[in-house]
Image (tube, rainbow over all chains, first blue to last red; front, side):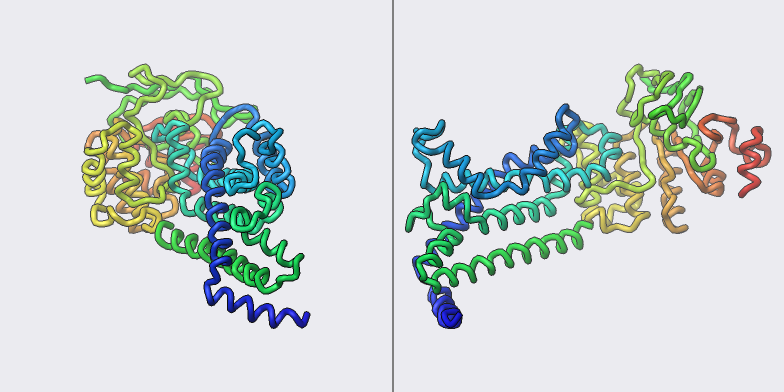
Length: 234
Length: 233
């Protein structure tokens, strides 16, 4: 444990000095996880809203499956995407394995169930309040869905942040499909794992500090957004 | 002019999961009047309104508008708890116009005019959900009024409001009627029924026991159930 104070000092030096290697890693992490959440949201928002409002066969079953998939282990997602993208896999010819794109795909698959399940819950609560009024005004299912998504936009923003928090903190999926290649697919979590095993604690610790700070900042942003929306829009 | 009246209910029953809520309702609404549905809790007042408005389907019997459509556009409903969308008061009124197919360029003008008629033009830009309960209910009335319905259903529109707000909502209801819209409403307040009703429909345990002009109902209700109800007051 004698390493800790010394490592921490070096780590803070790296953060304060805006170490180029450190910045590259942080930037890639942000880019990959942000893209993954946006990609997942394209599916999760309409699907979650349909699960809340729609009236189709298999809705309950699908809801249970989506809820269950929220706990999907990152390494399993990594493995599945690896199999899809590897040379022999069905998407092998695209040559995406060990690229940031592969990492985006893996993280998108990882967070999509979480985003879908939370979207469904959010929209369903609003639907419970709005249902009679929207029917009374003659809204079609499509119009009602659009209205609900718009009216819950601040809650849904918080949902997206929750997805981002999960994506940026996971290590298993990006490690497998990204390969942790220096300067190409190395993100914060994979670097921490690697540098720790190599014994380079300052860099690992510096990234750990940044990661924790980012996750805290995300949660603070979610909280502030929620409180602001509540005050402004009721 | 093409009219949606009369609205006629014949042999209408409503019994979800075999629990009877309404039975053998025969009713004809000719339009023009202010009809107040009275009755004890659980008599089926709200359900009757929702059936007429088209939010619920009867278990048996028929509900028909003269226009032939099952749910003509020219009818609106305002609920006990106003449902305000998370947007400005003006946008809430404009939303109803949008669903009714009014072109974008005319929506805000018509919405503002409706807010003006309920005395809330000065609050048009405020988020609807931070308005007081009475103001929210008036926005809901403006949203309905903007659609120029031939008939307006109101389900206990003043149930959770303070006396001043009740007065302003009642004034708006009277104005809407004066401008040519028929009113069908439920209330728990006999005072409100006295002030607003042209005629009373009394509902007890899912059946209509009488339908009487308001001027006669309050001094001399015809049915035993209504007599008991009025004495209890």
